Length: 286
Image 1 (cartoon, helix red, strand yellow):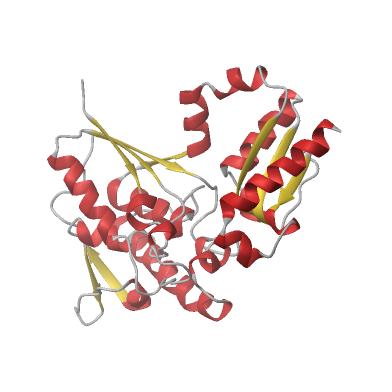
Image 2: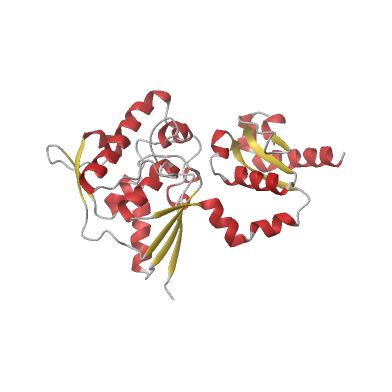
């Protein structure tokens, strides 16, 4: 039987790994994830499943590629070592080894493409510390990377569903490792036999830190709500904050900010979640 490695990228490059409010989107990249891929291969893994989402990075897998031996050059032949310099990219040099696993599946939590209004920089960049003033430069760097890979190596993955996941890491894994992108929720649902469990439920409660437009682009909470709607099961969504209400999906949505400030909610999430759940349960019974 072929050995399988399971890698959760958020444990390596996730926002949760950073100190509170210490976002550094222009300083961080995915190099460490490349080191984990190397370690998995060294341990004998022939297949790999990588979960991506919740990253602190926005480099489209540039750091990962460098860790695996890819070289990025500007028009003067100088190496580019920071993703923020990718707008100067002229060519790329693949390493001798470009196939690391016999099978590589990437579980993506959203369907966004790499670029544009629904791309990673504009939709998820603000979660990582990008400001609207940064969008143009960030987008320009990733656009140039995609253009050079398409022109030089005929690798055209920027428009793939999920390419924009985890700061463009979906694009990078497809481009540099030949990965297949699959909806993460679907993989989880099949493995967990979710529909069987849902059919036995009278009520489903789900949630995430912030329910916003991205919740309904393939993330778990939104997909669970969709399945509940299809099966005619009531579904309640709980979150730290809510900026996008979908009454057509959720029976009800409630946030910690109904009880306290966002700052207090972040400081003591378990405390306020317990109180919110108690209140919602009381209202539901009534």
